[in-house]
Length: 231
Image (cartoon, rainbow, N blue to C red; front, side, top):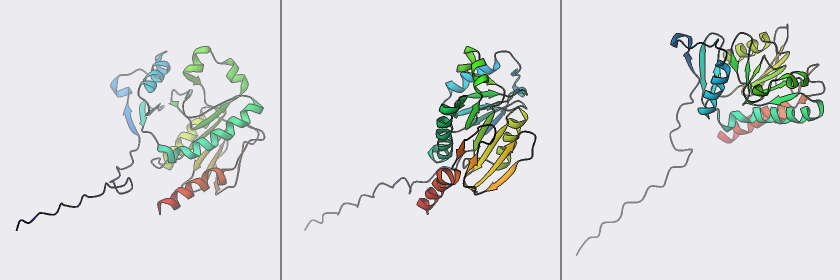
């Protein structure tokens, strides 16, 4: 009698949740000054902008001490807070003027740093004064209003230091939103930062009169839902 071997059972394909997850990658810093790159060249900001566009989806920034900062895509989770803030800011701008932008516009600070905020706004006067080329590349000076939203790979100390650079560069109001700690650091020109624990709303104060962001509902609660889904 011939024995027929039974076929080995076919293992089910692992789900996305079962696959090993790569570690979250943080930012990479490269000292351009040590490489002999002159950040003071008149066309540096324009060439930097072109380089950044050629290397999407990575985000490129340039620090005031000569470092190229390369940041990987933050992912859809980290984009939630940025999108919610930008949506409400854009709606407010329609009625009040000025120019609001998200994570695709470079600002060059007086000290030379080139940063891309998560959300920002400048006055109508500044927007009208921009040269044609600056619409497509880099806006000189810090935004009047600036927002940074912490992602999973961000270090809080580095984020707060960047916010202080924005303020030193001319910003009048800034928010550092930390959805993981449910905390907001409010920066005002010429003042120490104020820490708000789990605030319900944030106000544009006298910089963006009438602008209110429901940060607890639109940002903190959304991140909390994601955390619950992952448990």
